[in-house]
Every structure is written in C-alpha cells, then in structure tokens.
Amino acid sequence: MKTEKSKSDATGVLKRIAGPVVTAVGINAHMYDVVKVGKEELMGEVIKIQGENTIIQVYEDTAGIRPGEPVTNTGLSLAVELGPGLLTSIYDGIQRPLAVLVQKMGDFIERGVSAPGLDHSRKWEFKPLVKEGTAVSPGTILGEVQETNIVHRIMVPPNVKGGTVKSIKAGSFTVDEIVCTLDNGAQIAMMQKWPVRVPRPVAEKMNPTIPLITGQRILDGLFPIAKGGTAAIPGPFGSGKTVTQQQLAKWSDAEIVVYIGCGERGNEMTEVLTEFPDLEDPKTGKPLMERTVLIANTSNMPVAAREASVYTGITIAEYFRDMGYDVSLMADSTSRWAEAMREISSRLEEMPGEEGYPAYLAARLSEFYERAGRVKTLSGGMGSVSVIGAVSPPGGDFSEPVTQNTLRIVKVFWALDAKLSQRRHFPAINWLNSYSLYLDSLHDWYDKEVSPEWNTIRSWAMEILQKEAELQEIVQLVGSDALPESEQITIEVARMIREIFLQQNAYDAVDTFCDMKKQYDMMKAIRQYSDLAYAAQTAGVTPQQVLSVKSKNELPQIKFIKDYKPALDKIQAEMDEEFNALRSAA
Image 1 (cartoon, helix red, strand yellow):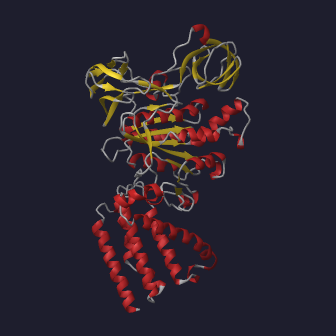
Image 2 (tube, helix red, strand yellow):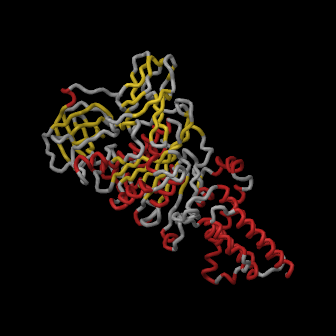
Image 3 (tube, helix red, strand yellow):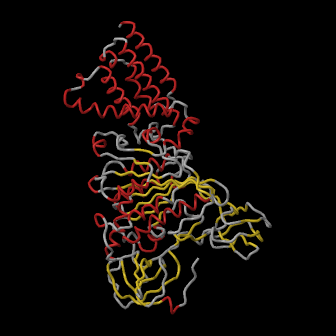
C-alpha cells in the first residue's frame, strides 16, 4: 500500500477548473491518488498526468473554488473501510455513511464534509478461531464477530504477509484495535482498507455450475443465471427494473446483497431507501437490511462520485465473497455510470467514441463485470459475486452503445418490454429477446437437483413460445380459426405457458416466490395438457372440444396455493378423465 508523501511533494495549487475536473500544478502524484482540493479540502482523485499538470476528478461540487487555491496529495488510493458495521449501512458513492452525514449537516450534503465508512467507536465481540502458534497466510480466517444474523469473519488482509500467530485475544474491541499479532511483526485489526479499483485476489476462479435460484419462474425456468454470473436487465422507464431487482434481492439464494443506486432519480432512490429497510427477509423473518449494504448516489450528486460508486460496491461485495459467502450485487443503473464517464471524458477533451461516450467504455464495463465470479477463496472456502446490472437505454433503444457493449460481456440478458408492462404482464421480460448462456453449464445441476426431464421440458416451452410468435402474424391477418387444427392447440398451449407459468405476482404472499419443484410441476402439468390435446386432435376430436376442457381453467389457481400438490394432482386426474371421454366420444 502507498504511504504518505512528504509535504513538499504533496502540496500544489489549482491551475484550471472545468466542472468536476480540475488541473493542479506543483504536486508529485501517481494515478488514482486521493487529493484534497481547495481551501474546503474537497475530495478528489488523480485521473490523468500530463507533464507538470495533474488532472483531478473531484467528488463534490466545485462551484466557488478558484485557481491558486491549495491542492494536497494524500498519496493514498481511493479505498474503502472493510469490517464489522458494513451490513445495514447506507453509503454515498465514496462510502460516506448517509446516517452520519444527516447528523452533521441535515438533509442536504454540504461540501468538504467527510466521515469514515465504519463506526470507529463501536465495540464488537471478537471470538478467535485460531490459537497462538498457528501458521496463517493472507485470507486466513482468524475469528468471528456476530453482525446482525450474519457471522462476520475477520481475515488476514490479502496484502499482509503470512506468518505464525504470536498473540490473539477474545473480547470487545473497536475496528481499530489490534486483535492479532504475527511473529513477523504484522498487527491485525478487525478493519482492513482496500483500494476500490484493484480486484481482491482469489486462489482460483471456478466454472459457473450452480444456478442462483431467484424464485422468479421466467428467470429460473427459462433464463437462469449462475452463482458468480453476470446479467443485464435493460428496459425503458416503468417496465419494472427496480421491482425485478428488489425481487432478486429478496428471494435469490445469495446470503449478502449489495445494492448500488448509481445516478438514479432522487424519487426512485428515496423509494428504495424507504422500502428496503421495511422489506422482510423471508429466510429469517427479520429486516432484509440485516444482510444488505446500500449505496445511494442520485442523479443530482456529483458525477465523479457516481463513477466511483460501482467500484465501491463491487469491492464490498468481494470482501464478503472472501469470507465464503454468496453475494448478489445489483447495479441500478450502469447507463448512468456510463453517462458520468462521458461527462468526465468530455471535460478531459478526450476523443469521443460512439454517441459521445469515451472510447474506453467497453473496457470499463468489462473490468466491472469481470470482477464477478464463483471462486475458491484464499482461505480455501467457496464464495461468489453475482453481478446484475440494470441498463436504462434512452427511449428503450437496445441498439445504443451501453446496452450493446454490456451484451457483449454479460452471459444473461433479461429484456424488459414496455408493451408487456402496458398489458399488465409482469415480470415484463420478453421471452423472445432474452437469453442465458449458462444453460449448458447448469444442465447437470438441473438433471440432478430438479428432474432429468427439466431441460427437455424447458426446451419444449421455448419452442412453443417461438412457434406462437410466428403464428401470431397469421392470426392478426386472418384470425385463429383459419389456422390448422394442431396450430390452434399450439396457440392455446403458448397462452397457458405465458399466463400460468411466466406471469408472476410480486405482491402475492405465495406467488412472489416459486421454488424449482413447484416450477417443474407447473410446467409438467401444462405439458400434460399439450400431449393429451395433440393426441385427442389426432384421434378426431375438434379443436373447440379440446379448448373447452374445464380442468385446464383451474391450473392458474395453483400459483396462489402454498400446499399446491393435492390440488394439482386432482386437476391432472380430471384432465385425464376429460380427454379419455372426448376420445371415446370421437
């Protein structure tokens, strides 16, 4: 890690101010050094060095500062504090806790105010897991702290050389106090600092072979994401990005949630900040915030802090991953992050790329998403960070640069559709435009954990939905009665898949979450109707008679029944009887 510079090297003066980008002279700086700008000591970061000119992006409003004011280099990279106290916290883009800022200055954040990311006065009960004389290495878990309902594991920082434990003590400590000393002189506290732009090291990156179960049928059933995977949710305003991400945060089988509100409108962010603390964690019955870290950076906050917020979030996620937890990170939205990069790039007078975005847009997006993954940690455990990024394309245009560059990187694409949301079909994910590239790697898991038939049934459902899309063009021209009899049945089966399986009510106590067993049983019941209907049609039963089978009309109610199996068995038995009667009559 970098050390403090000498005062002569560290102090310079402002030469030029262009919004959040300022130029200083007279300081000896490295890239990404944190600096204090002006008399108010506004926080900034070195982003470019040209000869004697040091170009800095400032994380706060620069109105009123003038050339000639001092600039001081700390010599340290932008880093976050990692330790007990992260969970339940709400931060801004550079890890200043909003609750502390409110106490200092009220509802409006003033310039030049700083606050540590963790509470340095609070004491935590530390329980050692290793003894004196134990050999440890970077990443080794030294002890535990009970933080909310999550056990916070205190580790040897990755940048501390390993050795033998010389002393370790149990008791109540602040995050700054030394809890362990190694024979090489290293002193370890419960808090560690890590530069946000540097990925935390791992022992090995594993193949994504386990799905992140979300409880949302269209995601788990048709377009699954793996633990440690990457997904994008692009969609226009009002199509349900925020509700979908809240459902993922609430129901996915990740143990830790990191939610980054990156440049969203203030009213949307307010909704998240007021709703998240009230959401109940279905696993524990306690508030969902007890396993959540929120980073709030609204669109009226300085753009430089917005650019930093995604790095702050992914670093916190990697820290919990290193403890052996599965972490789900929501970035809402990466479009606003890209817009911040575009604004800073224009202030730097860089050559613009497509639609004014910087030429390195794709590289920055790749750097961010590539920090996802399921890994073997330095301590030998398994952990994962799954990254789900919302994209807000202007006017819902998926051909714009941020969406297109994101699609080249991520392996799951959940395309939200405004027309579906207008028809009150939720989640409004278009099944024809969406895809998942994890299907092959998750094939064996579904075979083993759900059913050997699952992958076949999923493929069948997608074929039916695609066939329906082709037939709808004919139906709109000549009507459904003009279709061949078998294709009239196809249209009806596709309607059942859409309305029974794909539609899901996020606000219904039962339907809000659907486990894989229930998803399989529901899809199997629809497949049963399809097989019986085609067989009956081949035996001479008319399409009108096939479509008038009463038992299929009861299938939608299965979604809202908790102990659904007896009701479903009854419906399937009645379906068999009705079709047997139709075939006998034919």
